[in-house]
Image 1 (tube, helix red, strand yellow):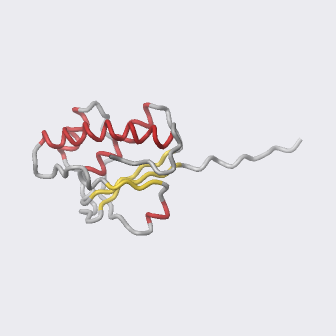
Image 2 (image 1 turned 180 degrees about the vertical axis):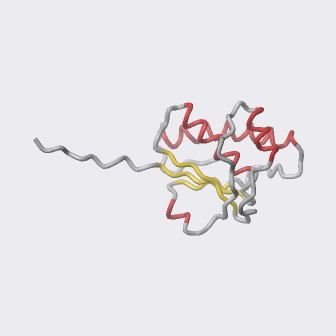
Image 3 (image 1 turned 90 degrees about the vertical axis):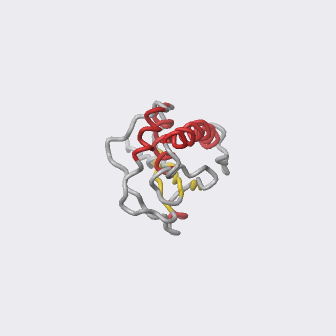
Length: 141
């Protein structure tokens, strides 16, 4: 009897983009990974980048506090800011622009907390659009 090799299921690749890749997009990356984990969703690659990234920078300390305030575990591997490149359009299934979200940089912890809470809600909705509703054109609002 011959064994049939099955092809591995392709991974869903998601990219969050903001300007510097130190506040909004890494926050969204961590939150979306946590949502996937909570829903026991495997096969998802989530990354972030910036259009004017401070390449190599950590995420802002206020982001870490905001994530903790929202009950999101902080990844052990430190964030390193990456530059958004046009070739990424072909590498990811979904790319979400976070420029419509207030940039909390320089506005204090309360603003970071506010952005985190909004992302927590909106990314949960986005998760269901992508994986439950199988929406080919999910919208982050």
